[in-house]
Length: 497
Image 1 (tube, rainbow, N blue to C red):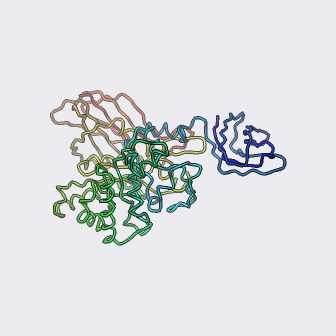
Image 2: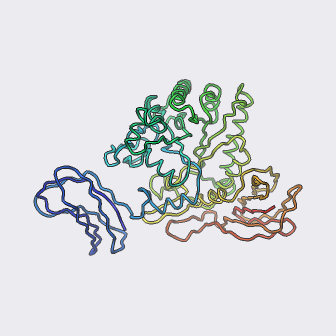
Image 3: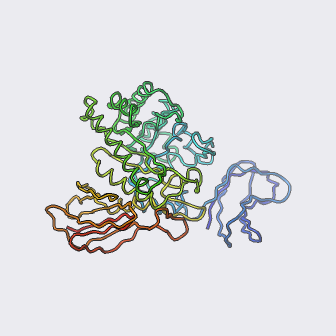
């Protein structure tokens, strides 16, 4: 089942126009209603009577005359407000509490006004940071609709690269201003009378990098950040602002000269492929620890910073290497990457006093944890620990002492202290057995177990095929508090205390 629309005009003498799908001998045809000299939007729907990997979509007429196509849209009939249902279903399973948009390097050349109003009349632009053309089909309204579908919080990045202060302030007013304000009125005219109430705002992206559009010396950028932050707070005093950080001189200067103009500071980490599995797995956690250690040092050395408690938003972190199989930056992820992501989560738990949020980047195809083809979607291996810890790891980290090589252990208790979760990552090629000792608590012998395991650290998942790597749930019984963790595995145990 498919649905679509076409914006079309033509001479009244033109013979009937049809939309048709062709594949070899197969054809599905849908006639359009009469067209005239004024552009109009004509909706259509049809059900395919055949299956093929190669199909041609035609707008067809035979006879004298002419017609002009403004734009054409074709979507699966089960789309959810324009989004692929299979992808939305996977995102709902991940249950992420917040999504950052629109980027990323992209935002430093993005004008938010290109993404509002009638979608069919929005200007396509050359992608300012990457390849191809940005059609601007997804703007503020579509993003906020997706957040509503997913029951997630919005986190909007503003353009402090090539963007102006006026662009940023009007964007905040458009999103959060009352319908009586200038830009709130335009938002209302575009279909959303009530303010969106977005709380989280990234003030720019990676402005420390020479690759960033609008990059400038740090001494100048601090002034720009402070000016923009003041204007954003004037437009919305409740806004929570995240400044651009990067461990070293950049973060240190931002925290010493702009701490009064931010609520959080961002950091980004990406890791490449390393030769050994254990080193490859370790590097994500090591990078997170490096960021945490640096910020502890800043708090001890920058006067008054500790009292301000500027915590970290690690709003991009991931592995980034390999061939682009799923489009631009669409790398494939392996089982060893899942182990690294799980160990990275452990490091966030150990430093949860510093890290306020951590946003795995990105979600779909582009270094994403969901991979798609034209007809299928599925979890990459890196989605598995994100799903597992989101749904089953408890919320209050517990200190863990561990000296076993190649084994990383994290634990947390529920708010009521009636559930204990213990999670282990074994990055070695041999099982590890150890005794779990929780002082003052007699652990039950039985627990619920979730395991992410594969003997081949290079194993990967392909959308539309049975996953090679998956989460297995089982009952677990300890003997004398001894636990065995399989090789190359994540094992999470849930104890009812």
